[in-house]
Structure formats: structure tokens, C-alpha cells
Length: 185
Image (cartoon, rainbow, N blue to C red; front, top):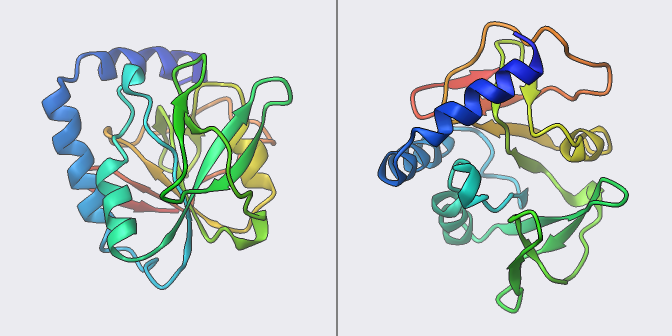
């Protein structure tokens, strides 16, 4: 399938999810993540879910990261440059939704890319080769090209066979975790 068709398909599938289903599936993903060999790392980059898009809810994962005393880094998007800054989450971090409904830190301590060890990547869909489809603005691809961090996608749905229009600037995942399976690429 082509990215535009995949976006349409998975936005529709997400819209059909109840809040209860989304929360249950998100909890299953968080539990499955506990099985990965990543917990010796310290710096974890985590997106905060866009409720209106019915993204995988990252709150259960955030609770695991806090319980394991990990450093959590949140992205902040710049829609002029289509780049992200990466800010350390602290007890003083103020979170606010931007004009696109994305919860982000208002300000904070910027973390150098070299420190980030694991990135939890939002996506609409992915394929059996680790390619992903996001919302199409390229924020994560630009970011992931600059880091050697482990890239872990989070998806409510299982993989597509193939995304046909993968571009050279698209960055593939190392893992993708769904409620039913962990894919390694």
C-alpha cells in the first residue's frame, strides 16, 4: 500500500476504537515493552499521546519509566523548521497542548542528542521491514537521522506487508511493539 492509503486506513481504524479498548491495548504494549532488553539504559525519549488522534497512550509507559528511575525526554515541535527540541521531563515541567493538540513541555532543559539511548516512536502504521508511516511532516525522520538511539515504534495494530513508497529519508525502526507481538527488524 501507499502511505496516503495507509494513513487513511489507520486513521479510520483508530477512530473506531473505544477509549477503553485504547487504554487496554496501550497497557498491553507497556507490559510487552518490559520484555525488551532496554532497561539498562538511562535516557528515554517519549512522546505524549495526542488524545484526539487516539495514539497509543504513553501514560502506562511513562509510569514504568518513572518507577525504574529513568530520565525521560519529551519532544517539542517547531512547525517553522519541522525540527524538534528534546527537553528533560522534571517535576517542574509544565505541559501544554500546542495549536495542533500535541502535548508538549513549555520549556525546560534541552538534552543533547548524543545522550538519548531509546526513542519511543509514534506512528500510524508500519510494515514487516520496519518502515513506518507517520503523519507526513517528517519530524521524527529528521530527528532519527541524527541519533544512534534504539528506535521502538508503538502500534495498536499489527504490521502491513509492505509500504510501497518508502523514501531514502525515511528512517526505519529497530523494533515495533503491538499488544500481541514484538517485531524486531
